[in-house]
Image (cartoon, rainbow, N blue to C red):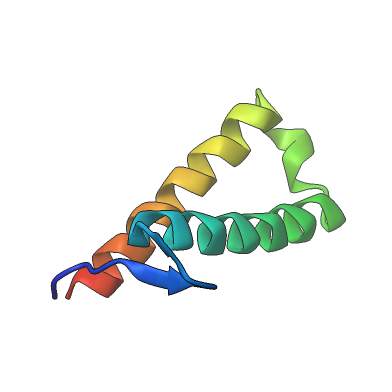
Length: 67
């Protein structure tokens, strides 16, 4: 699949920016779930862990859309 620009209210934006926003929403949902069950207390650096999860989610979205 070829990535094409997305028309957002008359402004063309790169498709990666839309994917980044989507990955951010998914990461926030996963962060709330992890916080509710107390899983973030078991990681060494919670902010670094959340950033790593964001990168994993973003990479997964890019790989799924590129197929």
